[in-house]
Image (cartoon, rainbow, N blue to C red):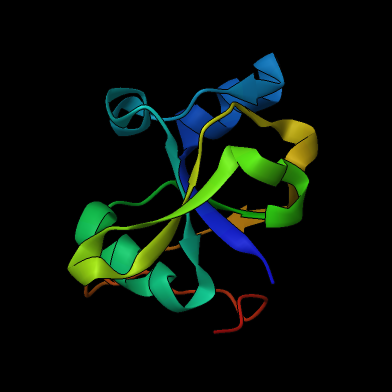
Length: 114
C-alpha cells in the first residue's frame, strides 16, 4: 500500500534541489505533512486543489516512516496519514504529473489503485 502527497511544481522543484521538505504552508501550520491514501486522493485533490494545474503526485511507502507516521482522524473522522518528520526525496517511490481537466477535476493516474 502506498500513500500520496500532492505537491505544487515549485514544491517539487524545491524538494529535488534541497533533498527534503518539511511540507507545504498548510503542513508547516499544522505541524505535520498531510498525506492521503489511494481512496482519499480524489477527494483531497478536489477539496484543496480544484482547478489547480502544475501539480505533482508523489507516492510513498508508509513503512519507511515508522512511528513518525500517525493515522489520525480528519475529514468526517476518516483516518489520514500524517508525517511528523521531514519528507526526503529518497522516501518517494515514484512521482508523476497530476493533470487537471477542463472541468477542474484531476486525473488520478492508473498507478494509483484504490
